[in-house]
Image (cartoon, rainbow, N blue to C red; front, side):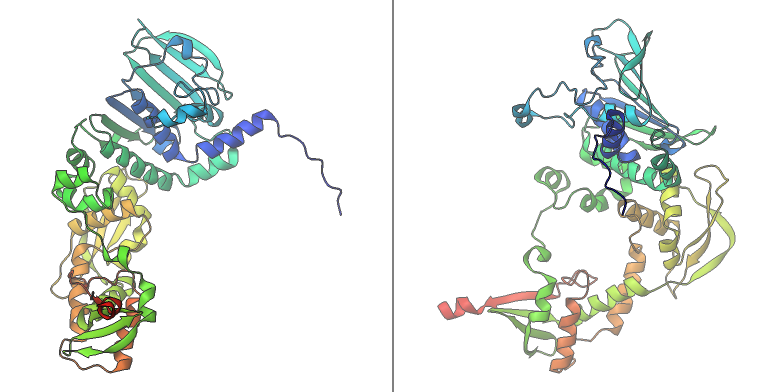
Length: 453
């Protein structure tokens, strides 16, 4: 065996790069940190510019308070911050950041230039930093109050990480957009605009808000007015009091907060009631289970999981009116669209927003589908990329099929048949309601309460 190697300290430069890679993990983290800095600076206008999805350039400009000259030196040094001085100050932190790591880490991973003008300064300053966060150039630069952080070639100081970053840039870009959309929604009174330029082409708008003080209007600006109501569950579950008040909602307990799916395997079957319901007992609790509703939900989820819809070829490819982000989401989730009967012609050499053409639509008897179903799927996949989903009209079609093939009210069941239905409830994702919203089960009574009385 080879002799054990001596344990030695890693050189400080390598330590800095390693730690920086643990602070700035990806494109989304880099943009998030810079946007948070702008928000902490009191900005009401934030402009984000990307080049080649962020591989070449990330630039975040704001109209915040700017940086005073006395703070230039500490701006990009590790653990330098104006927000806390010692550990006890943590209880008073009301900002997004306070550790003083983001800009220092970005310096270690890329080429950083900062343009800033403090509200008390007569002229702005251009600052160029080395990979240790030290200023190498400092020159006057005319600009209005605020700060611009220019990041070029993110991760290029880590060759392996840089290659991986470039290879997976479309996925990193999509995740970054999701993070940015969340900040656009919650940042009331702040106008946020993000654009992306690919090569020498024109800049494409990624996301833009108007600076409204209304959460409802911010959601509309990010996702479109037709999605307000349907977006609420994706923004916050359960909704807080402010959201409930703005949308007129009631935050109620859901069955999954009261019961677990594991309970069904432990239930004792008492019998059938009125040829439509199963009476079951778990410990001292009695439950009544709707035999049609529970079988319908099981059949529905099986159709959802396993059905591959057949597509009908179009006579001619159809152009789709997609944003750059939506186009990327579609391309990254082609297999899910194909399982729903949609197929596309992808031209990677075409300009962004024009790379995708529709060539096949799902068909099923009296059901017809179109671009609106594609838009709905893109919205769902933006929130959960790579997760199998169905358009609402496909769900309606499956719900109709499931209803027709499920055990009906008025059908007599033996113990084995009832056991099968209850066992299925523990095997599906959402056993609490049928596809049409009807509860599958109710708690009748606790036998302990009856015996105690």
